[in-house]
Image (tube, rainbow, N blue to C red; front, side):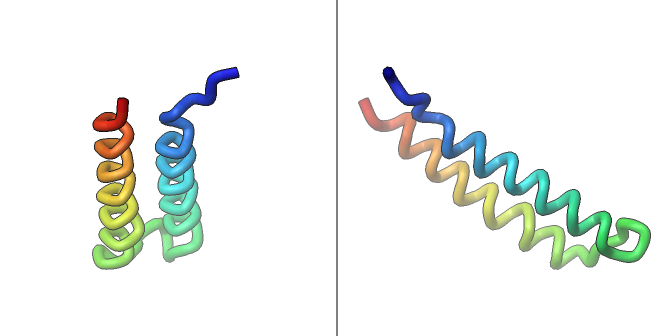
Amino acid sequence: MQRNRYLPWFIGLAIIVVADGILLLLTDEGQAELAQQAALVAIPVVGLALMFLMFKSQK
């Protein structure tokens, strides 16, 4: 059985979406600080993008 090589990327994307949703639910009326949003979204997205490019470059 062949594994889906994009599965870690999809899992990471799902974790970012869930974590962002939890942050918005726990903050005052969904108004999170800009720095919190940037740290929670931008940093993991960059990591996932690099991981995706690594997978694409492998044969």
